[in-house]
Length: 540
Image (cartoon, rainbow, N blue to C red; front, top):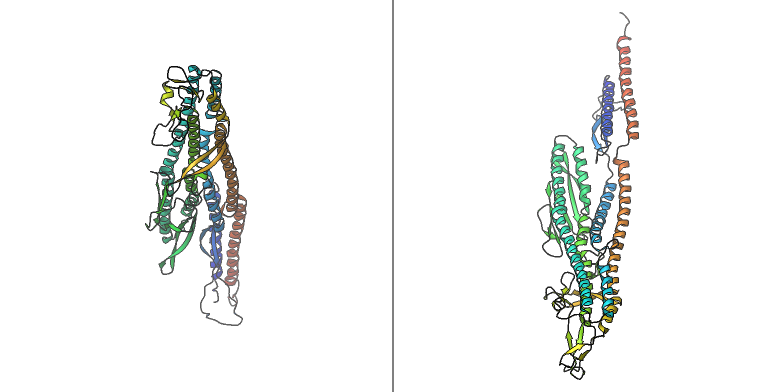
């Protein structure tokens, strides 16, 4: 197609317009250099060539375009970096939630800079030593009982504190975490609708897309998600963009959380233990339980702390949550109670000092328990133990010897200087014991899960050490993940972020192109002036 005589002016006009619009886009980028979530924009242009039949056809036929066409304004984003960033956000969310849980537990169990169970166990040993030197002394027996009561009070307090941590985390999970996640889903759905409506009116809605991308990044910290953009045909060749967001669990089951403006939701059942999580997709299908298949994210990290007990789970898990420390503490208390109750017994003897035997030939033992269960229907635990009523009211005390001798009055009393049992108790505090947790099997039977062998003192110290190791490892992992995600964010910024140096170069570039387009129009004007006014003057 041959160009008209004045087509050059159209080319110059379009060039000036494109350069002017490019300068405006550059100014928009510079103005938003400090705006959180802003994505660098650029002017999209293409060469304008009007296709059609040639009125004149000659060979060779030279074709020239008609200038530049502005096709729109777009954002500069790298989809691959978006995917990488959101994957790292999910991993960071898991570790961050776990570390937050460990820090709450450390406030209870870490006795590095305060007195607690460790000191109480040492004090109990000290009081038993004094009783051994003063057998049958009610005063020293009372001191041992007071020391034991202090120890039980600390066990009770730790059990209460652990339960409060569980209650607080559960409430926060239900009332804050899940609600915030559902609110993000709802906001993304509303933005999808607004973006589509804007595009129908011819507005690219780039600022709304920035807002949506920030919400998607935030959503990725809760759950591992994938996004899919698709074009929706409105007819007559006009399309608008629609967004779908999927959650895929660890078993590969895919749920569509968002389908354009249709939104799914998550719900938590916190009435029992473990806490359960359910998902309903964007089409209302569900709820489906995803408690154990949720994948990375804040949701998983919180559920790990609330539900997992490490080696005590069936099957064993890799996270030692609140349950691990509750069960370890309960096992320690049960072993302590059973050991000392077994030691505080006396064998029955007759008036001649001979043991009284049962039908199987075993000496009949009189029981004088030092510790009892608050609720007799439940096992010994950190919250279900007390000083035995008989010891508390003075009916009996610590049995200093397990051999009774006749007192000549038909009653059997302990020897006045015997201290065998007290020495055994002192030894029991220091010697190694096998600590086990009774795990209930699906068939109702129990299985002993051994988790530590050592003294009572060292068993508690071992719990502290495990928690400190997990906390330190979690913090190290958190730092590493923050470093990785910052590196990914920096890579994103090289593509999507605004650089003053680059925008400054663009300003010069577009200003020069604008000046060149103006010069083109001036040149064309001078050429036509010469043609019109400077030629064809013969005969004038």
